[in-house]
Length: 318
Picture: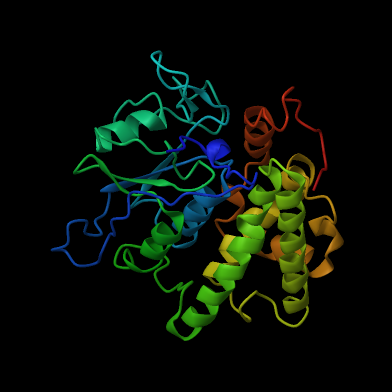
């Protein structure tokens, strides 16, 4: 099994993302295996990863900061063991080593890989977190294990299962009357945009790249058209689909346009989309999830098959 997203390439040269593996669910039911409890869970993230940062955005927007702690890894991958060549997410040795990143406060782990191996001695998948390019790590301090590493499920838990202890419990980003529309919107945004930029950037042949770029800009054009008639992607109130879209759009001009060859048109050239991301950025809690310095250092510094020299572009300044 691939141990990073860089290895998820099919024989046709296309990027094919594998599924997450830890899929337990936290519930309001106090009798469940993983009940929603104050101080029991911890979120591991990387500011570089859009999947991770949508979890962090929910944590902030719902007012769960006091109930659920979070820790960010360093942006640059490092060797995770002396016995093999795996490169992955690592924690700094001190709080001053890497601004924005912190040592693991719970297990003293040196890398995310160690957390996966603590949770399962037989684990052979990717060592990812809310930091990686796919999933996130929601850790149970009581049972000392990973509850879930699938961001789409973690945000649903944060939205509803912690409302008894959330400071902003009234915020519902997945309201019943919009759920069918949100699910449908998530589907085409994921394939065309969220994962679409990776299909462009990780493609190893011209054909898969051309197809991915076509689908990406068809989806962006569709968003631009929708946002010409309403404030948010599913209507006039912010919802789950907006947060899932925002985390990709905020990285687009700085990273994907250059690094992943998504340069047909920049987000700033879409008037509605550009105003839309500025609108969401100003929602309380959201701006603190965007650390553009760490985002750029991660993408340009780690993906050496795309950028072998590792030079980080100075712009654009947004």
